Length: 531
Image (tube, rainbow, N blue to C red; front, side, top):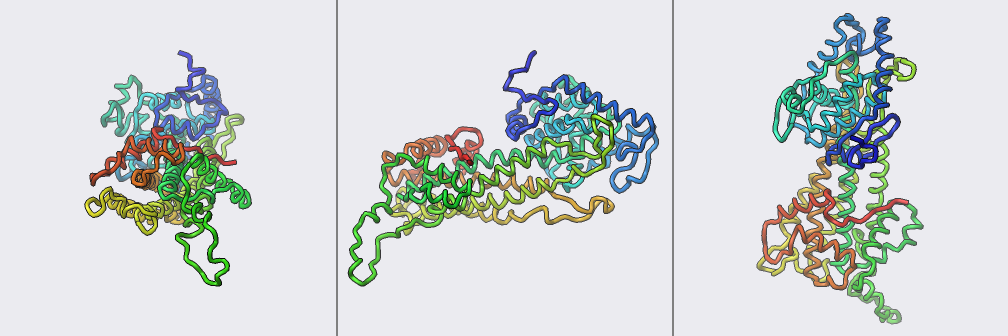
């Protein structure tokens, strides 16, 4: 079968970088991976260079020496292969619940990408079997806790390597099996680790990078939904869009600010609703010659959550763009140790397994998540209080005094935003020495990545609550015929997952449906385009 022009597969070729969307497609959408034949030949050549060095009894870290703090010990030549198997035994010390299958698939894919760079001197047969596990859907059960993100994700990656050898437990065919059972049912065979292969498979940043990739793709979608929710609120509150004038953004000249403002303008284009601010400005200044101050019916500017949305939230798309660059670089790196130059056979001892780039960028994203959560919490508060909603009923009740409307949603949203704030603490600052002081600095990148993944889920629920609340406000305002066409279209899309609240009912399932729809392309999410 030819896959040459098949967009349903992801090709792995020599010198072909990987994109964050390809990671997502393999991990979440279960795209098949295909190995280029020329790549396998090249990997075989690189492997032969290592074997020549072993034939000469050269000392190579982790191949014929001890690991980490035991690197001053040389092991007998006849135990070199067993040495790699023992590595998987003593590192099988993870704890906690299993990682989500999509996170494990992302890591499996990134192990494959890393060793296919050719600097790990792994056998082509092992590479092929790793691809088979991905394509057949053999997903190792990987404990959540164990990685300090320094010598890579040693402990969690051990469970992926063990599964290739027919050891441990996996998820296959919608049930938990032993790895050996799953391999047999899939028509495959377990591998036997050769010199260096165990270390090559587990020594790298593949877990933290895979989790980060999935979280960032979803965070982009969540941000888009949040911006759409703000436009719904603007129309529901009869607020002005004049604050998004491009001249204001240009003179500040932040690309993210300009992008958010442009998205807001595009969504609000064509509205026929006259804002309260516009009406106010059309009034003649009756007090100009009276020598006294006169109170207006409203202010001549919107509150900050409306007026300053581009300036507040503009940093987020910039941060996401930078983070995607970091993730893609990390994903397409050879990140184990030692590296074997595939052209010369030179042994290079270094530290590409350190996860500080991922740790730092994920820790920064926590602040972006909290920024959007806080912002939407303020937007919802405006719509829920008749003092600020310009005539909407308190709690957006369809029948004030009888039904409580969105009161439960607001309480639940406040709880989520508080949780997000608490989780903003950076992981990377908590480094501490471990492993005989060999790993005296650690990144805790996997901690940071897991935090972001879980915070994104909370944020998505915050966004969903905002959409449900704004849709209720628009319905009560009864202005759907005159609001911007794109906002109206988004309103109707939201209504497919959360009907109008005409009397109190449970809304937890509405929130869950809408949160899922945000990441499954079931809503007309706007583009946010950086210049």
